Length: 390
Image (cartoon, rainbow, N blue to C red; front, side, top):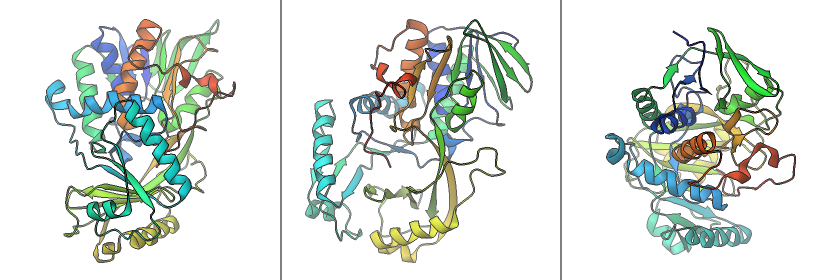
């Protein structure tokens, strides 16, 4: 039964909402209610991503979020007794211009200064040794961190949710938020299709839908949903299961082992924001699929012999600077935001849940300083651009 009151209402049952619920409950917060509009958790962006995890970012806050989060993901069996299916393949970035070389050497120095000691620059001969089947025409160099790789978003989300439930959090699916009421500038009530919940604290973890949730309280949250799609192939015997996660930085083409085949994808830099109210915001753009396939065949000619067994699209929750919005709105008391990760949210969900729990319970993030990721940075001209967006 949907409760009529709660101390904290979390909107969105993906990896972020589940992680925040767990970290709050683990700190003995009470009367936590997580609302998910779908029948099951992790059916939105969390369940529609390629599962990448990496240290190779271009800003200190993203690198620090990776340091904390990937440590948790690697230690999932020790902490929770279940594997997060972490595979350290290494992200192998292929760089094709002198500007990219300069940018990545600068990023590598920053990453190493923050404790990512195993990230390194590669010359072309070294790349040949790691990826002998990749066409390296035009490639000038690259970078790799051996601990970058893949993990399972579904398992991580469900584990956080299960652990939150054990500690008293209530999770309600098939519950759609249709409004939020305020009184004297503070959150007062969440309205859903199943009834209202009186509360003084809401956490907006609605991902691509975060702007719509913000509009309920009059906030302009600059998050837009951008479609990203990929496909799976059947077995390619020549590609070993430990093959690096290859990314052509200029085009964002990527491919990495998955089951017996590969996952292959590419970002459409001309994509326009998706209509969330359309019958299928996850529809495949077949024209762009062909573009992706053409570029993938160029970089990995072995794909010519493979068969496509699945196509899937998800939604990035993109902000203007490709960083998330974390923290309480200054304009509406009790309204917190944890959204806008721009394609790297799942991998940062352990760290995001930790710092959000600190901001809610302690009034400030202590584990990682994320104060610069407030909503107000956009109107105050404090945006921080992440360069390593895939």
